[in-house]
Each structure stands twice: as structure tokens, then as C-alpha cells.
Length: 272
Image 1 (cartoon, rainbow, N blue to C red):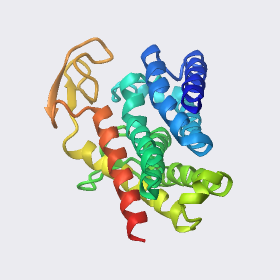
Image 2: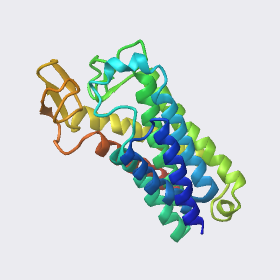
Image 3: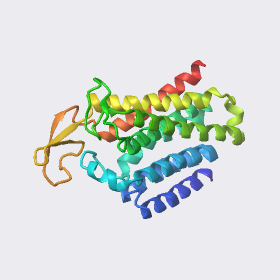
Image 4: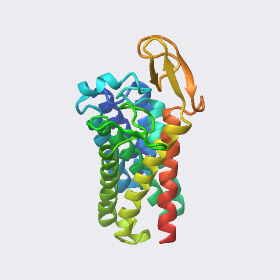
């Protein structure tokens, strides 16, 4: 019954997300899949974490949208999340919460929260970091790069990532305090939100590292600009691969970042 209610709630939220233009039609499908599993197997605390990520990231996507419009040509997609984006950001978290429900191992729940903390940290870093007045620097070399360049980081963006990760950690702590089921299996420790925050922040930096090294980056000869878009740029001209692995687009980068965040969270709770 909880699983059925979970998918029903996910469908309702997906519908409202579509009406608010936060989700595309395929994004609604992705939201139903990931949200249904998380709501169904994660209960109150799982739903709270996913909603925190979805609502905060959607709000920031539209924050000062006109200022970000000139950078849209660099990113692979717009503010509307599609199926692959929904699975990239929430698929690993959904897997972890299902494993938590079947095993009741604390590491799986912390991994679930850390995966969402990573997704939130990365979204906050992107949406707020591009508004930073100081130009970013490439995470690998420290070279100054254009705003929106994959692998570019700034102090403002890093602080935003920390804030996004910490928000998920705080909601996770509230879940630990209020959810009687969680209290049975997870120790009420101040270290848990610290681990979740740290995992999200470190994994978001790993996301930037992938962006600077092996993520597929293309070039539009018509606009003479680098972009994540392929095979057609926003202007309508074709793009060509200039560096990185062709299959490793931004969605795959996000997926592997959430996987690293989940792993860091699980290892930290297992060790300490």
C-alpha cells in the first residue's frame, strides 16, 4: 500500500512539476520512477529528502533566469528536467533506498541521503555559481576559464555546493529525529549529517573533476564556442567533439557523481 501511495504521490508531484515547467513529459516519467520508489520505500524521511532536492533545485533553476540565459548555449539542457536527468540525479538514490528497505543496513540509508546531497550540491553550485562575479578556475590547473565551463569552480560555487549538501543533511537529521522507523536502526548521531554534508560536497567536486577531464565537450564552429550540446548546438549548427569521452555526457557525469557521494557516505558511516 505504501508503495502504491508512493507512486501516486510521485505522479501528482510530476504533474505539478510539468505544469510549472520544471519537468518535461519524459521528466514526469523519470520523476514517477524515482519518486515512486523513494516515497514507497523511504517513507516520510525519504519523501522529505527528495522533495527538498526537487523544490530547491527547481526554484534555483528559475532564479535570475534572464541572467543565465546567455549561458544556455554552453549547457547540454535547459531548466526543464527530462527522463535522463531525473534518472541521473535520482536513480542511484532510489536504488539505495530500496536496498535500505530490504537490508535495514544503516549504510544504505546514509548512501541514499548522500546521493541526494550530491545532486543538490551540484545543482546549487551550477545555478548560483554562474552568477558569481569572479570568473571560475579549472579544478585541475587553476586556469581562469569562462563562466559555465565544465570543470570550472569558484569560491561562490563551492560555498553554494556546501549549502545545498548541508540542507539535505539537515532534513536528514530531522528525519532521524521524527521517523520512529529510522530511530530503530540508525543511531541518532551528530556525525551522520556531517558525513552526508561532506559526502555531497566532495562528490560535487568529483563532478567538476570529471567535467574538466573526461566529460564530452563539443565545439560549435558557427558560434566559435565550446558546449556540452551534441550533435546540434542551440543555434542549429552541428557540433564536433573536441575532448573527453563521447559517451560521457553531463547526465552520466551526474550519475557517477551521485554514486561517489553515496559511496563516501556509506564508507564514513561504516568506519565511524
